[in-house]
Length: 216
Image 1 (cartoon, rainbow, N blue to C red):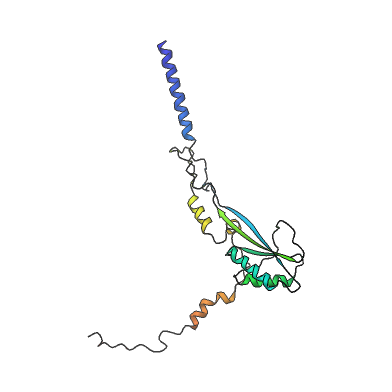
Image 2: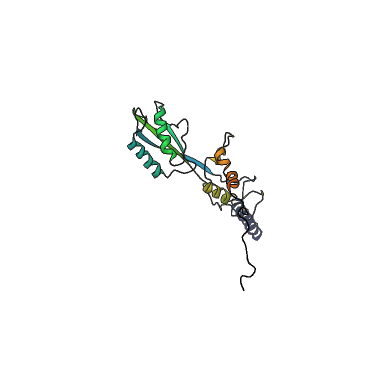
């Protein structure tokens, strides 16, 4: 009878130890690669404003209203401006480009699809803005000291990816990178050279006379 009790106690102890061991394994890293588990997520939002248009483009009051909307939107690098004009009027596009140019912005090509139809006699101006964030960071779920699979911690990469998402000027570059047509803007590319050439040499007016008697 005493032997049976000892066996039951030993079996219970082994079962408890195995259960505790498996529960500890639940906090082990499972990512076997060097890629961080949490990556940046980029979201894009479209903001629209319908402005009245005419044969010669937008009127001055409508241009002022559009300028006020741009100012309220706090346009910045990475924002994109589009025109949804069913008439494809050159005058309307020129009016919007003139207002956008005051904020250092260009007007893109085909506008993205937005809810609702553009009413006759109006032009829809669309501002597309992207934002980036890393969901789930920080992640301290891998709290086990045991790492039998030699996995990467779930929090690995959270700091770098979160800082990158917060500091990147154009969040859409996190998706497809920056693109260029390879052209060079001459006026901006030669500014440093022109400034260097226009600066007169330091010794052009002769050396400054300095007396060795001074200071006595």
